[in-house]
Image 1 (cartoon, rainbow, N blue to C red):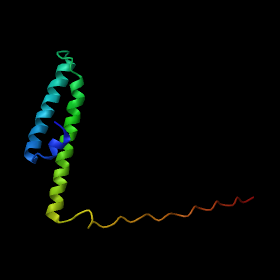
Image 2 (cartoon, helix red, strand yellow):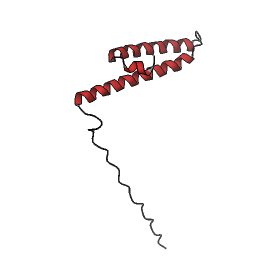
Image 3 (tube, one colour):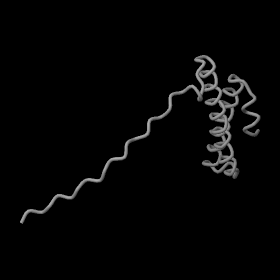
Image 4 (cartoon, helix red, strand yellow):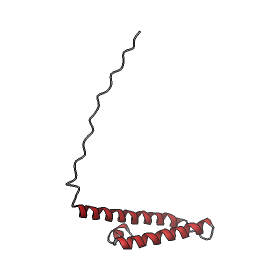
Amino acid sequence: MKYAEYIKMSQEQLTKELAAARKSLFDISYQVQNKQSKANHEIKTLKRTIAQILTALNTAKTANKLENTEETVQNAPAKKEKAVKAPRKAKAKQA
């Protein structure tokens, strides 16, 4: 699946997909380690899939928090800029 499809899913579906992806990652990595399979390229794709699912879950949770608190990015307080410190003067050497 693609990331766009994960965004459309509910949180329950995403957690089920995450569990299935983690299980298949475990199975494939076990098979590759024991030389039962040569599908080591699947490990990379499964890790990417897991990352996409976790990202979709985190964005969904963040969206729910924003809806519940009625807080948006526009209403968030602006970040204060740090003051630029003046360079220190070099100490004069005493002779």
